[in-house]
Image (cartoon, rainbow, N blue to C red; front, side, top):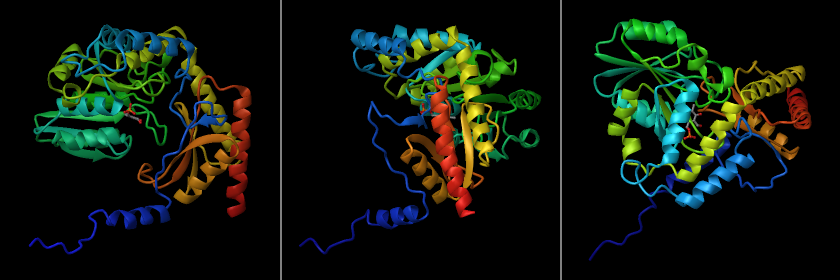
Length: 390
Ligand SMILES: Cc1ncc(COP(=O)(O)O)c(C=O)c1O
């Protein structure tokens, strides 16, 4: 007879794990959202306020009528449409790259680009604060990965200089999401070139925000179209849509179509979603002031935080950070803002490598002066709470 003695449930350990994370203030919860939410949203990545722009919504609806809900298959099998092609051409033209390729998310664009360009026999040199999708891409690539201190060009050079691998790739965020720093892309490319390495820059937080017309850090550094630079980016932030991009030399793009597993074995981005991103990109191209608008608003919010005695470094992109300290205090501060009608983001370990939990207050190009006053009132309450606890 089979032994039916009770065995512990194999997922029992999850309860203790969840309790530990809750006690440390690290637990993540989904928050329900309604479409007519009266809360002022300063937590989203819709940097230019284009996600609900009428022209964008119209383009999505028209493409959905034409193509339906999905792309019906991998881009290589059934899923590549004129919308994808036009979006790729427009995105490449915007940042001055030779060619482009759309992925179904920014995460998958990074996985695809890094794993197709680096593998066993390649050294990857990666900034310590690169986005999680680049970190995962490095792990998946099976290349040797050296993590270098944040923004440390000399460390990149030293690491490249002693490598034994034939090929090397330096990877960095263009604008870092946690501290808002801008990568020294020109200096990185100089050292990469000295050592025969390629450079990959993730412009997720820079597209639509940094540089003239929001063309990103690579363009702003005068490196648009460089034959040894690959840009990745997202359609999910300033373009208000979903999806990812790789932009660079045509032969790199052709290699990705041929070998990038997250492109080949993934259903293509829905044409309607691509059409929304294309409409947003056209709005950005026609209104370069959107990029300066969001940067100005972010600086304004950060200056307000400082005027209230809060610690907020001058932002270079769309996000004003307000440093709080302990994870629990940052969560309580974000909750306080929400109770006052303002939603802000909250970064805690492990998303903050320096261990300082912080509010992440995202500006948008379409914020009004009245919105900024609401943000001021919420930050004033945070400052009062933190002062009373000091
Ligand atoms: C720097 C960076 N790269 C890539 C991604 C992934 O993009 P997506 O959300 O479109 O998958 C993000 C998104 O949070 C990001 O911040």
